[in-house]
View 1 (cartoon, one colour):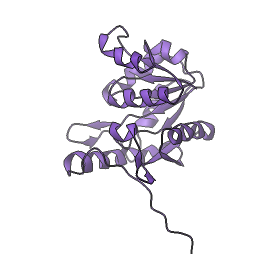
View 2 (spheres, rainbow, N blue to C red):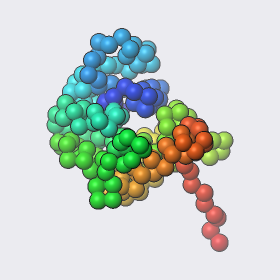
View 3 (cartoon, rainbow, N blue to C red):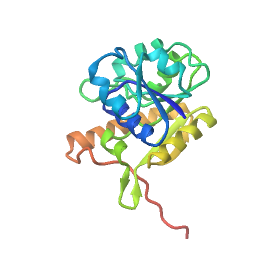
View 4 (spheres, helix red, strand yellow):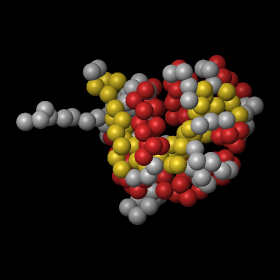
Length: 209
């Protein structure tokens, strides 16, 4: 699959490298493609372009910018022409507060900005260290996915499973109102409560009967 990654920070770079390692064609979309700091992405097998070019040559796009840069990045992409846009951002502001919640979400806002995109919320509820390796012995970190387009969600779930996660669809895009506070809970536990960045959420199941 041809995948575009908007943003080359820790989350975008980690997922982009892993997707390239899995055999996908990965194109990063950044503000300054000529910046030498992007050389490591090329060494990992990806290519680096402007945002519009990366989107044009991709089938699926991952949005992995800081929240403050998300709107500009999405608008720079232009019309997504029916492509899947995976929103991995979280609308978290100063003091670890959610800027949107309860009646709206960052993902729904992204969908309003992203002309022609099939928006799916995913890859927002754990840290980049877990994205690099989501296995914990015999267990796997869970990746919950939310979106209104069933086909788009299946594609994203398949990609998450390919990267080693247990992927489950949570519901429509409005369920991002659950996933974004979940990300805040991860940040609180990992960074404030001393659990460390190597933690992740998972599912425990009892056998039937």
